[in-house]
Length: 238
Image (cartoon, rainbow, N blue to C red; front, side, top):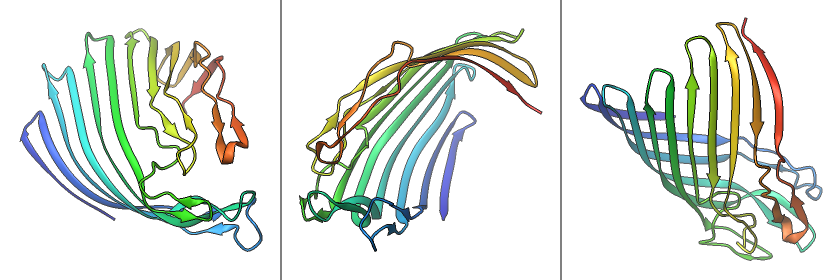
């Protein structure tokens, strides 16, 4: 379900309001006790207001939005005891925040881009045998994220791109006892492209930044972050 309204002040500035209903499908959790492996869909209502604009002869694009979400039947890991748990639709939550995005075309070949987002997602209701988590931050929801970078694209087909992406602190458990600290990574690529193909050398996490997730599920697991990856890729478009 989607409803929206927009208004143009002139050809370069537009505001909008949207109301949308969305779903996250249910599923099956194989590690749950017998009879509790399946869980139902999660539902949310999203309310958003925003601005889209262009300036400086359309070389500068600036977009921003504010949003508010009501989440019901939230899929959460629910404890039965200190050793067992299952995924259930036991929580409701509120998510609110804003996003900013700016892109500048410095020349015909060079573009600069940046983005920033702030998010606060907290439980309105959620409890199990381990405690009551009302007011706590939802798991795996970074408080902020951002990116900044530059791209060079020549008419002859040569291009290069580099960007820095950062993520704020996030809690990895419902009690907010364990957290992943803020971190940032650098990605880059350089290549050559034509109408139906491109070939490029890429680097993900160029400086091999470690950002492991430690303390998940009562300090029982550690998820290792992706190490630096460097490779060559060929893409062909039919």
